Each structure stands twice: as structure tokens, then as C-alpha cells.
Length: 293
Image (cartoon, rainbow, N blue to C red; front, side, top):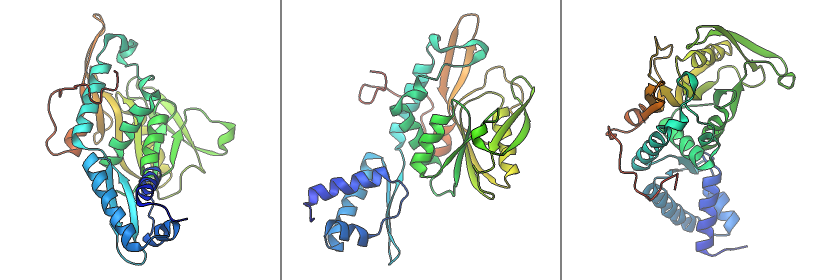
């Protein structure tokens, strides 16, 4: 059934947002909407311009018989900076400080809006890189991995510290905990990850980097390659040698006063690694997109 152009634009936009990284041919769109390819091409130009203006991502058009269009999610620099500093302000509240210098994150990592921003930011960092799977460790890293996997349109796998009968046969590795320097074990189902995969590691919080290092060892056991490591937050307070050198953090817990119960969180290295000229200090949060209004 032929539809009006306004309806077609809404429907196409919705499709791209719901199916990131999926290539759709102009022929399929033309048949579905009973419209000429020239009209579909004009629609794609409008959607592409709108996505770019709103910082939602890139609508990539590929010419040729096997070509088409696909949506690559992203996030604009201003929106990313605003999100980082709002999160830093929220996590700097004294009530979030937990014993051992940890920060309470569970409510944020259960907030769909926060997770959408984290997913888009991490997907933005790895645009153009081949990634076959996102890996995290149970449990708090799972919603982050799920969000990133959605925006990259790839599977995510969960490494566990204890085996589950529902996982079938597993591969296990021993690793040194970065904070306690104890020998720990993690396991992953043999069916979870294909040999030779390109894997992105994500996690919620990094102290010494032992868990990240363990996942690196796990990936090696599957004869696969680590594409990158990104964490929502790290701490640089009272830490010894960091077991992981090359990583990205969105936030950094840079000062903890356990006796006074105070905590200070600033931007991690994400803005520096992804954008050319990030702001070095907190931006004006304003009220336009305040996540905690």
C-alpha cells in the first residue's frame, strides 16, 4: 500500500534507529513503499541530514547494485561532554561512597536513559572497527554490554566467576585480582564465542584492572583478539601498578576521603580519546538535558 511521504519518512527513520548497522537496499525500500528509487533517495538525504544535525549518528549510503543505506549510531561532542559532567556531578555525592573506595552505580546502570547514552558513546568510539562480540563479567557490567551490543548490532557474552549448568562445557582461566592480589577464576561457555573473534571488553568499574586482564586471558584462550577496553568509571585513588595500560574510561574517581566521607569524580579519558578538543573542566549543565531533573 502506497503511503504519503511524511509517513514514509517517519517509518524509515524508525526502521534505521531500530536496526543499527543493518544494510538495506533502495530496491527493498522502493518495493515496500511502492515508490520510485529517486523518491527513496531523496528521503534518505533528508534522514541523513537530520541524523547529522541532531548528532544521532551517520546514515551511510553505499552505491551499486549491492549497496543501500545503513545507520551507524554515534553521539555529538557537546552531548557527550554534557553527559560526562552530569554523571561526574551525580557520582560526587557523598551518599554514593561505599566501603573500599567503590561507588554506588546500580541505580544509574538500571536507568534506560543513562544506558542509552553509555551505549552510544562507546559505539561512537569504535566506529569503523571490526567487532564481533562485546564481553563483560557478571553482573554490573551486563547492562552496559547489552546497550553497547545493541548500538553495534552484535552479540554480547558474559564471563562468570562460577559455572552454571545451563552454560554447558566451559573454558576457565585463573587471573590475579588487581585490588586484593588473590588468584581468582572466571569461566565462559565454549559456545559463547567463536574462535578468531574480534572482541570489545566493557565493564562498569575498574580499580587495579585484574578483572579486565582476566578477560584478556579468556579471549586469548579462544584464539581471539581484543579490539579495545572501555569502562564506565575507573579510580585512580591509592592504586598500585595498573594491570591494564590501554583503556578508555568515561569517568574517573580521582579523590576519596574515607574518614570524611567525601568523594570527587571527574571526566575520564573518553573525551580526550574520542574528540579532538574536549573541555578540561566541568561544562555548564543547564537544564535542557539534565538527567536528574
